[in-house]
Amino acid sequence: MSETDLQAIILTLQLASLTTVCLLLVCVPCAYFLARSRSVVKPFIETIVTLPLVLPPTVMGYYFLVLFSPNDGLGLWLRNVLGIELVFSFSGIWLVSMIYSLPFTFRPLQSAFEQLPKDLHHAAALLGFSPMKQFHLVILPAIKPALFAATTLSFAHTIGEFGAILMIGGNIPGETQVLSLALFDHVESFNSQAAEQLALLMLIFSFVVVFACQWWQTQSSQNGYVVNNHVEGL
Amino acid sequence: MEHLLTEDLLCNQLQHSTKQLYRTGMVAQISLAISKPVSQQFACTLRVGEVGVLLAPSGAGKTSLFNAIAGINQASGFLKIGEHDTEQIELATYKRNIAYVTQTPVLFGHLSVGALLDVVSAQQARPFDIKWALEPLKLDTILHMRTLSLSGGQRQRLALLLAMIKGATLLLLDEVLTGQDPSTKLACITVIKTYLKRNQAAALIACHQLEDALALADIAFLQQQRAGIKQWQVMPISNGIHAYQQSLLNDCADTAQDQQTVCASAFLSVLHATTISHDPQLGLCEYRVAGQPCFSAYSPHISAKQSVLLVLRANRVAISKSLLPESSFVNQWQAKIVSIRPVSCQGEHGMLIDVTLVNQGALTTSQQDVVSVWITRLSYNQLHPKIGESWYLISKADAVSLSCLN
Image (tube, rainbow over the protein chains, first blue to last red):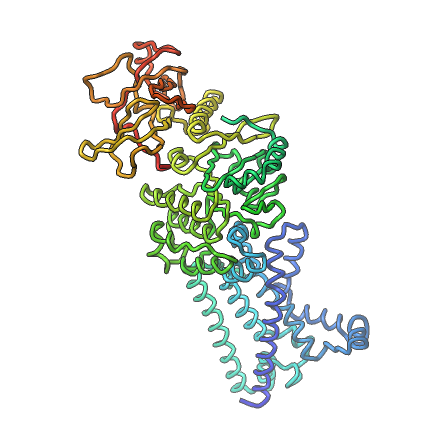
């Protein structure tokens, strides 16, 4: 395996880890409030969140490129005022990964929160749990399988990203070249042995992730956790 | 029987007498007006160890009332719990000095019974020690089991135990004895009473089984519709049970369709009695009821000169114009007919006769228990009993049972 490939693997793992952690921090409270919400804008928000599932990655990448272009508009303002350049940078591919993997984190969590017994909050409050303790001692442990599914799916999905990253990040080795782009490079340059290695690595990884999700759900449903089929549900 | 008081009147009375009441062991003062989902008013005061039962058919708003007291539903009024006269109405649910066992308890399915007890205990500033109750509630052998795999009865008993950990001064129990077999039901009753005594607490319960109500409660609350608002009227448990059964019968007669199960022949009557002796050889316990001798099947749990409640079913007693000296009816009490009512309800056709026992004791008593007797139309046509007449109420010893209350 070449140094460029190793760089791509490390960069991909960094990107996937950072994206997953940030998505969890954002999605857990948002999914919780949306699951309990009866607002009329709820279907609209759900549509926005689900959109990256069906939107071609290149379309999303294109809009990002237009929106954050450093020559005008928001991109120009970000560069001049905050000194941030999102196009062809790690920050850019991190942001697009966040958006692209959003439904894979958000929907399992929202679904799990919606499946919790309606009286669970009242039951916890009646036993003396404060609202904060209700959340971290009762609600979060009850949706542990959904948290696991959201984590693994968003991590795995970020690792497999291609189109959107190519559009916003280009294909700069050591900076924006992730595993899927490195594989694309090897195929283009007819380096079939290196391509085979990377493809097999990604195949095994994806299989392990999906299998772990399924196994965890089976175990969890037997142990009284709130579960739904997060993999098939997507 | 106390008269129904309006909310404002009761509020004023309670506020003026707060300090005096607490000196006499008062632990809860409640006066609430609830608008949703069932519009109702409720006012009561409860002393240490006292248990009040809400007697009303399904849909009357018992659970809504409990939810309001616990802080789940909105309510206005006041809610003072504990020795220090702490106002609870403005407090959030988790801060209230109230423990509530709901009709269908939600337990945290991902935890084992032991882990759940530990987690709940850790949330309390001063958790109430419940180790003594594990064995009688038959939970000591299932501490390792996940709450998800518990049976309905086990879930109810665990919910009761969890509520007790909170150490609250007011316990709300919604159908907590439902689904329990007789032995565990008795254990639950004993545990609840022990908790109330140890923790200087009181309880409000809702239950449809009148035997359960009788076993636990000292006072009853019945609903009355006044100016479009349901108001709860307080009365002694024996009177409450009689009045509630009569109201069920009235509802059954008023509506063409039978909306609830009413079995007039199985109506319960309660007698205040004093124990005299118990004889295991004869298999009998002897009491005095309104100065007249009374016998029940042997029970080892009583002592002499003890005040007890005896329970009779309407179809287990009969009336006779004269004494039956050469018969197996060991209970033959002189009684006076106070009402006769034809009943045609839920396929039953007969006469429900209410009698009061003629007091033959040296001391006069203010408590005059009413006993309901179920007879067939044929017996009624043959005997022609009339209101005001003196008859003998007859029964065998096993028709009389001792309430768990004692």
